Amino acid sequence: MPQLNLKPSHKAVRDYYATLRQYDRHNATHEGAVSSPFETLLTVCAKQVDATLIPQFAMRAPSGSRIVLDGVIFDEYGLPFAYWEAKDMDDNLTRAVQEKREAGYPLDNTLFQNPQHGILYQNGEQVFDVDITDPTRLIAVLQYFFAAPPAALANWHAAVAEFKEKFPALGRKAPAEIIWYTRLILHCSKNGCKHLLKYTTPQLTESRGTTRKRQLKTSLIRLTRVSNGVIGLSNHWENWS
Image (tube, rainbow, N blue to C red; front, side, top):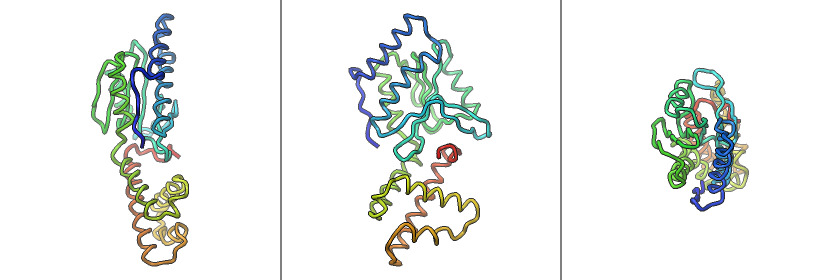
């Protein structure tokens, strides 16, 4: 994944703070207003790293209850790697984080934010709690936010890269096709289809060589294991499709 390149002098950062100043002059401090400039900034950042911000994204908490995040950022393979929750100027952000934790919101790589305050959680631990009225601190938080996908997701990217390198013919196909096959494996394994690889392996290669098929099967198994790790990050795979 490309690295985020952001400086206080960049237009996206200057526009973010300029919009907040305009809102302040009109006493617009509610969440619906002050979250909008940050959403715009996140959208710009996401495009830099070949990712996509989806606002108001609904998913299921581990308890099964429905939750809606202010934003979820998906990588180029369509997998979520970052979550955003916005609050208004009058909210106690620390208390809001605790409430979201109790509600089952993901804390794998989650930024809780209002115009004055940012709290970043990664792998369930707080790594930043800073005043983001300072552009330098805001950028530091965003760089961590976009540079540190959960470990299992990083392993997924490595596995896909290795898979494409070993099998150039498949590598020329869209990454989504690789993910589709992996999801098929997961679906069938959950439903007791013990001979799935017997049927998927011939579809994934034109070669009939025994050695090549054995290598392909090994790579598929690795992708499956990595995908299970990604699923374990939030237990919401079905919501990402």
